Image (tube, rainbow, N blue to C red; front, side):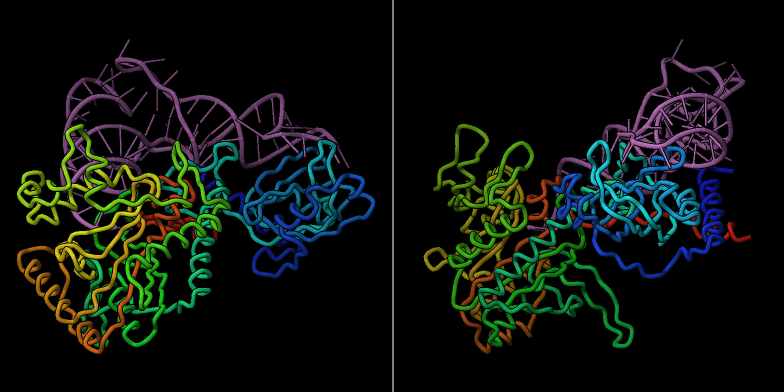
Length: 501
RNA sequence: GCUGGAGUAGCUUAGUUGGCAAAGCACGUGACUUUUAAUCACGGGACCGAGGGUUCGAGUCCCUCCUCCGGCACCA
């Protein structure tokens, strides 16, 4: 018999013994008076004398992480909400039935404890157990206590085991939640309305990306999972929702990397009567406060250095290319304005695309400290307003930190004629084979024909920001269930069935 | 898609030039009523990712495939 089948059989047998003792091992409520973290924060500083002077009775539930049995007594560690508390069971302090249950407990079982707080000889705050409720039975073996679960594939596939074996993983997702809560609070305080717009769209747009396609049976139409909410949110600005935001998933049918997951979370917000300069100011305020709310400080450690969200450098795209040019003979601003020079230094088909490619090649990865890059070429910005004094460029900026693009913002294009021309240019690119070119969205143009107020808009990648604020090197570490290939036969159903026969 | 690396017991790992697959934790039995990776004794547990091949003999060498990780490409 294999090890795993042997363990299953042992635990199946123990389940029967627990039932024989009169415990119902699944699905009944347990009224606790404290959680483990509450006990630790409330009584963690109490002395032995204080705890014995005024006895503190508690009822606590949790998962057994460790058992140290010593004859007619034993110590267990309970895990709840990412924190551990020791409990102490001794034969002469509990009923015969409770002690019999204690002897059947496995690491990983979930139990409820009734008892009182005390400190052990070595000073550890613990619960002196008076009664045990059995709440749920583990059937499989947890990873070992010292190294925990290290296999990356298992950690992602079985995040539930990862969270038990590596309790610190929980902190990443606590921080992620704080980041999102901070954006919500800050935007709500500024009068922004949170909305939800379609994730399944008959036409996709608002970004350059290939979509996922799905099908609605009753209507018999193909739908696209959205690559961005942008065009819907701007329809709402037309409709008079002058400050609007959405925090939700985007789906892009492209490669996977340490910075890319096919579904990812984006904050997009739009504000009427401002422009990209206004969005810059707002971004700085939002990001600084999010860093504080998420980590307690505007300055965070990332890799070997620190990143300070209290200060943002600013370069035009051309300045950044010059600043970070890899060799001593740097190009001049005039070089970067010269289509011929750009054509010689990049295989891209247009000067704007060439400039963008040079920026991404030389500058992007080196923008570790929060940096605002502004002045984007028109060709890579189909939804941004032109710069009045330089019509081949647009009023757009991106924010980089930790060598990654975090945010993208611009003065929204609200001229329907110009928007029509931009869509037509995209259609031409699509006809020429660009699979990521935009589609013509006539309803969106119709909306602009009802007049959209001038507005600034911005998108912030929540996953990447979470990476920075939690020191995570891979986007998979900030997504609970990152996309992996299907696992294949697991076989647990067959093994459970075999236990019953 | 291209390219480098990894896959050995439930977990974490070792495995020499090709020669009987090891260890710690976990598990089982026994001892132990304040332990801290508890301790002590004994025991069970592996189709070495899958499939082929070379060989008297393959965890080890060769081929194909699967999964994961990193890089490139694509993208935010």
